[in-house]
Amino acid sequence: MINPLAMAAIYGFVFGVLFGATAPSGTNSGLTSFAFFMLCGLIPWNFFSMSMSLGMNAISANSGLVRKVAFCRETLVFSNIAHAIVQFVIELSIIMVLLVLAGSPLLAYLPFVLLLILLLAIFSTGIALTLSALSVFFRDLTYLWAIVTQIWFFITPIVYPPELIKAEVPEWGQHLLRLNPMVHYVSEFRACLYHADFPDPRKIVVLTFISLTTLAIGWWSFTRLSRRLPEEV
Image (cartoon, rainbow, N blue to C red; front, side, top):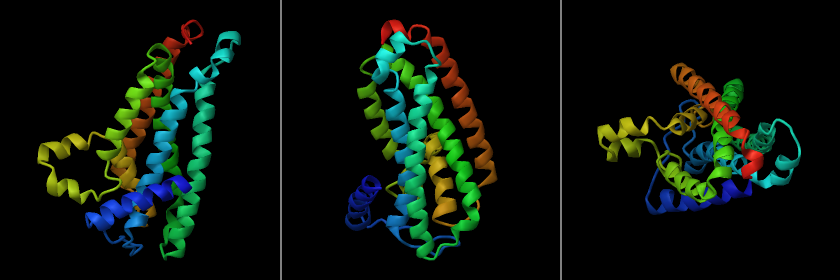
């Protein structure tokens, strides 16, 4: 929990103090805290980022095991995702306690939070499976992905309100940014946690489709490449 709190403090000072960014008033919670608003998006993002990082290195970090033992190698990725999920749940639990103490009636929306955790975990696993196999063949992928992650972070409205995009980005750019799945994951987590409101049913359907499709593609890619992993790792 120290890492997201430290990031929240840094970004909160830069965007909330220096740039004067303000958080919208919570629909049912009445919250107006920029720190809470940011943490409700930052913690899901940190889980996604950690899943990618751990999953990408799952095969390479266990090269001796992969070369010598025949087993379902995707379990290495799954175990790293499970580790990230445990940390994610702990961090979310802490921020939820703080939100309840601040007066948010979000406990009624806990089932939707659990659903979003499941969908984000499935989405992250699909990408991690692909990256874990590709990183064995392309050693520089780890460094390139770090750059991609930084760009992805800043095109997702986490440390700034989504309204800023509507005000500063042209219409065609807004349509392009909506193709970013993390925009919708973050917005739905904020709907449940910060606003204490129901998520958009249409977005839940779309996110379910994206998560399952990403997992299917990731698993297919991993299966195709896994035959050569012992030779290349």
